[in-house]
Amino acid sequence: MKEQLTEEKVFKDPIHHYIYVQDQTIWDLINTKEFQRLRRIRQLGASYLTFHGAEHSRFSHSLGVYEITRKIISQFERNGYPDWPAEERLVSLCAALLHDVGHGPFSHSLEEVFDTDHEEWTCKILLENTEINRVLRAVSDDFPNQVAAVIQKTYPKPIVVSLISSQMDADRMDYLLRDAYFTGVNYGTFDLERILRVLRPYKGQIVVKESGMHAVEHYLMSRYQMYWQIYFHPVTRSSEIILRQIFRRAQELYVGGYSFEWMPNSLKGLLHNTMTVHDYLKLDEALVQTVFTQWLDERDSLLRNLCDRFLNRRLYKYITIDNPDETLLNEISDCLSSIGMNPDYHMEIDFPFDLPYDVYRPDKKEGENKEKAPILLLHGKDEISEISAKSDIIRSITGLHQGRYHLYYPEEPLRESVHLLPDRIKKLFKLD
Image (cartoon, rainbow, N blue to C red; front, side, top):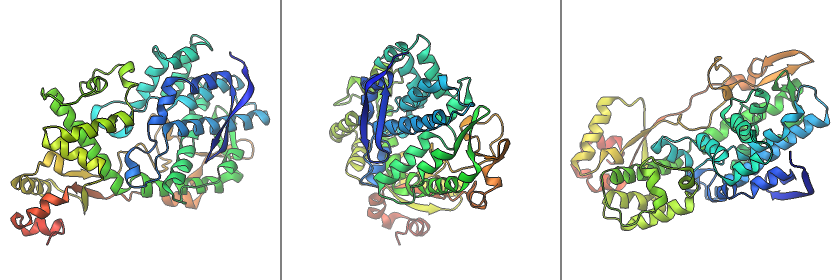
């Protein structure tokens, strides 16, 4: 393994104050072109159209996840906990740093349209001919596979995986604090230092010392608030819907043989589902927004309109619908068609449970997604219990569903044709 740096490197950070790099391997990974690309990928995708400060990058988040992981491991090592496998330090730090390197521009919207997965792309970047792969192979020939196994959650030591992917991992803790800071809200904050002090390695997993339960309650309440106030904000959902529709319309046109006025080669593989790692790494949000700007002059009026709406924040409005049935949706679709709108693009039902964010639920059964494993409290030396069994606060928010159905639509065409709409539809859309 490579030695530590002769002089520690330090990043100034608004969340952790300082981020410390001591390992040559970590420093080399940060300076690869694949990791530097994360500077050009926003952490919160299209949320900047709702919260104007949400311009922070996957780069800064990845450094933050690395720093939290480094602090946890340092605490384990300082206290000499026998259940922490000291030889796993470097693989844990590398996985923490690189866990998001496979994200694309506006990643979750892009993934949904093109059926891609950022973790799969992350592993390809780790394992194929990249600068990151060369840095990892300098540690050992099998080291890229070890780091990829942590990200895939197949690494043979679950305690390593849980640092990066669990109900209270370094990833979640950093993005909650960072997203709260850059969106300008207060309810995403919690006492990170206290939580780090009460984490313990125990029989191959990470648990929380019982005296730290209240700090974890605060963390879970913050997560609950961020879930509903930031990640599922209905205006952000509108921008994400339009973003997905742009990608979907572009793919529909491209596959149908439409001749674009302007189409970069790096985007063709995405639209045709033939993307290589080399092509994928050329995609960033600067390129995508440049493409959208060029598409303002395309012949296809629908693509033009969608790009204009996204770039200039002319978002879809929404109405709340309780338990929408097929009859009602068909009636709305027919009405939109009758006034020249396209229901495939001009109406979308949204229910906020399809994001990669989750409120805490302790009741996942064995065999389900391992990252949903519950948070465990350690009592004394050997007694373990799931945290909601001891906390009234956590039990009160566990599994609460507050989502409501929203129907998104462009308001202008409806208002212009309001005289042609039946009274029921006018009332539903509050046009009467």
